[in-house]
Length: 220
Image 1 (cartoon, rainbow, N blue to C red):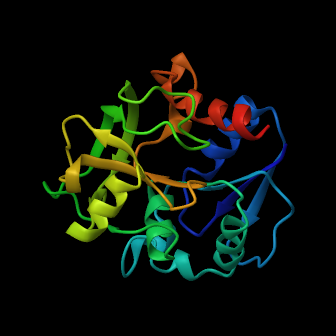
Image 2: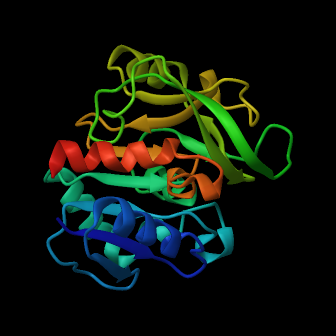
């Protein structure tokens, strides 16, 4: 098994995600620069959190047009699992791999704490380690995590069972409390919470570890 983590100017969780992949998957991790146009054959691609390009224009808007994203889109279309976390979720919506958009939190404040979440579907390579309806706890750290989508888009997500996670208290005002969504093929997941920051009890919890372990059990 082999993983890749993309780094953009301003990424600050790329190393966190690479370490999480290394420790949980026990596999080598390729660190891929945003300006590259190719990457080695890998079994999973991580698009990390941070502030790519300083959140200039819109969060993730410039990163979504980086050279490497054409390859990420191609690999996702070929079935390679892709996970976008926080800013990575923003990038995945901006490049069209996921529907909707992320805007400023409803309270216009930065949120940084563990939050309670509900697992809405276990039908993906990343959520297969949870039970539908299970309550888990993951940390968030974002100012622009308010997920928005129109009524038709929301109905499509619900009808196709593509909402992965919901907030129990919806601190940022996201539509229908959505914290994470899947693409139609169910191999791309975008979420605002940080599973890579919850893989050891020393970090405050291990619920994020099961997201990475589920991938290993499904694909590995």
